[in-house]
Amino acid sequence: NAGVMQNPRHLVRRRGQEARLRCSPMKGHSHVYWYRQLPEEGLKFMVYLQKENIIDESGMPKERFSAEFPKEGPSILRIQQVVRGDSAAYFCASSFQENTEAFFGQGTRLTVV
Amino acid sequence: GDSVTQMEGPVTLSEEAFLTINCTYTATGYPSLFWYVQYPGEGLQLLLKATKADDKGSNKGFEATYRKETTSFHLEKGSVQVSDSAVYFCALSDSQGGKLIFGQGTELSVKP
Picture 1 (cartoon, rainbow over the protein chains, first blue to last red):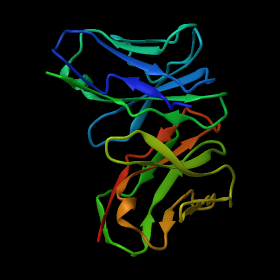
Picture 2 (cartoon, one colour):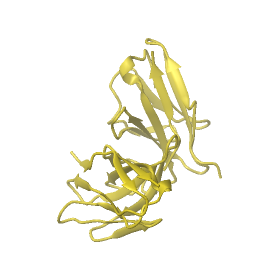
Picture 3 (cartoon, each protein chain N blue to C red):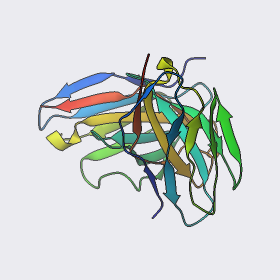
Picture 4 (tube, each protein chain N blue to C red):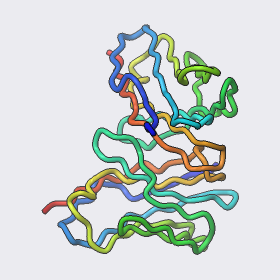
């Protein structure tokens, strides 16, 4: 049973471009969480999704960031018009149910140049 | 709001030394508490957890006790190994699931 898969592992974007980060949850998991880890900081919750629904987006920046988890396919975290401050590691986690253990992917390290 | 504070790193120890990484929390309710470990280049792995006061979580020689009176969840290990070198994160959740509030992480380096 493969774990949570994130791709790409490393992503370089120029300022103003779009970044798309993908997360395939563990088999059978329908709950996905996205976190951002800025340099020298802990992980900060961004958004919680179930299939086709955003449950909690209290940690998402109000502009340029969006997330989806379609019925088929991976969850996508999309950052439009990236700026240098978006450079961070983005981690995805998945769980079977809301109140069960979440398993983390290896993260995508975004660098904005 | 809820928050987690853990001791700053890096912590450098010799092999077989005793480890303590302090973690305190602020929460309005009765959260579950977790320790996660992140090895270089990898994602976070759950190390141990405790879901109510006085519970002790333990795994791979690590343990932590949920202390409600001191709002703490300190991580301890009696004898560390080089392979324990990693970043350790304390976290809380008002459920047992994936919406977690993390501390800033403590880097541990164990020298032979």
